[in-house]
Structures are given as structure tokens and as C-alpha cells.
Length: 62
Image 1: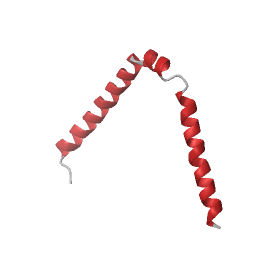
Image 2: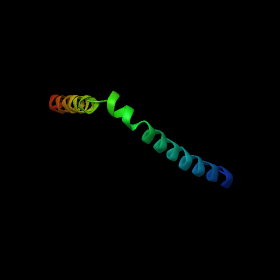
Image 3: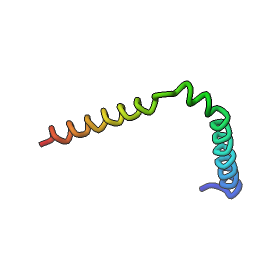
Image 4: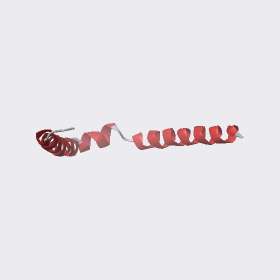
């Protein structure tokens, strides 16, 4: 399905992409802490809302 060259390219691309993303994130970590303060609570609220919807769905199946 894929040639050996395509598989090698995909592997190298994935490794380099992940390394670049890690380096970029580490450079911007101070900015992220300042700008996204409190965003964890938004995520928690969203997950609780999804859980609530699933509970209501399962209770109303009966």
C-alpha cells in the first residue's frame, strides 16, 4: 500500500513535527500561563456538562 520511502518520510515527519511542537510550547509557556489562567475550570465545567447529558440520556431510556 505504501512504499518504503513513504513510510520513512512519514516517520521522520512525525518525529520532527512532535519535536517542533514541544520546542514551541516550551518557548511560550510563560505566555500560556498568563493568558490561559483559569481555563482548566472551563474544561472541568464542560466535562461535567457532557457527563450530565449522558446521565440524563441514560435515565430517560427506561
